Image (tube, rainbow over all chains, first blue to last red; front, side, top):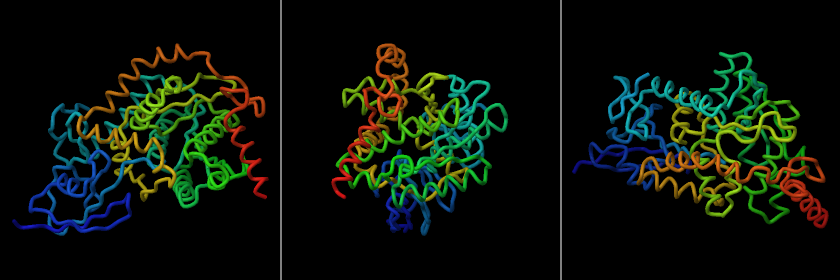
Length: 71
Length: 314
């Protein structure tokens, strides 16, 4: 199956990674792959929030932002 | 605004959030929904009177910036609600110094007076120094001094109430932590409004974000430009609270609505708890005169240990 490559920034870990997913994979698949609980994050693409059922595109740049309070 | 009770979108605009009940809201509808939810919470729990000299505890994080933003809107609509912000500088290098810059910038831009009080100036030690001297849990000692200062400074500033950014997740964690530690008396001091009005010793505290989930608060902060770079207190990862938080988030994922369930059922029992524990504690600390459950308050006890241990090291 054809794959897409996504650039991901995870703010809580201050880390940039690259993820490979099947074509037409939604945000929820990316979170599952990264073992991130969707309750604990919001996700943005091009500085706009996207929901878990939003399909990802090849070379998307995604930010995963933690909703956890800093303390 | 009518919100559809299913998985449909609110309108043709792109949604920014899916609520627990399933509805998907765009930026404008979510802003309206969220602010109305906070205003409704204020009315439902009678958090504000017609006239207030209201303080807002500001850390510079998303929760306190969100509550300050919404209360500032309220204050502009109602000039009898006067607003001032209080920040506590615990002295946590690499963390609080950054969030205080955000807090100051926000207050300057919105013409809100910000009063900053530090552990170093008030107690003689930063939190980082305290933790080098005493072998204690960081969040416990920090909480004692922060509550002490917020209460004392609110009184000195003649604030009628102090609003904090506590949200539904924070409350849910506190309820469970108190249950697990068999400290139900502490739960009697939870709820959307704590303390009584016009008390000589206690400043009344209110939590306007009481029914807002952390994800909703973060979404509001994001779309309104209040979300700064992620910045977590270095001490929080070791805390009991962090473990309870993770457990609750796992449950919320598997069983959506868990957090609302815990807080709503707690609200049913809160009047009984308050009645049961009414009149307990509250005496004046024999050293500083601040409210205390014992002869000497926790802040004075810690300070005595800090000064003793510090002089031994010297």
